[in-house]
Image (cartoon, rainbow, N blue to C red; front, side):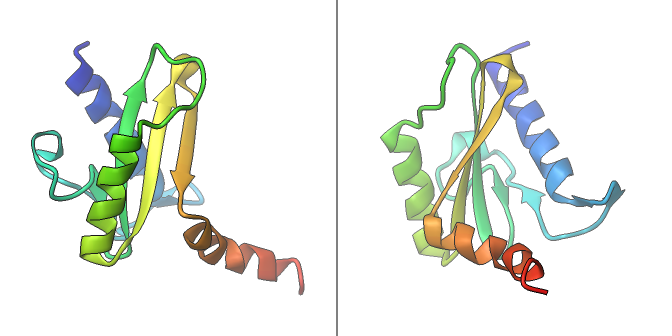
Length: 117
């Protein structure tokens, strides 16, 4: 399988997961960006609140995000007033996520509030 197909498969799987809640598919606003690999105007996946970049580093044993890729996604997020999320698949099919700390805290706040009930 060529690298574009491998990247597309990761994007498709992440998109499917993002639009699924409790095993059921929903329209939650996450979509693929057409021709994202050929342009730098948006991430691989988009949402009204997020821009998401997906990368496969199949020969890499650990997580390491090139600064150029992080700079790209941050610039897109700043231009579109969205939070950024970087998803990387490394060897053994493991997936890692990198995102802004404040966005992470905001996203997880509802889960943390549940523990106070």
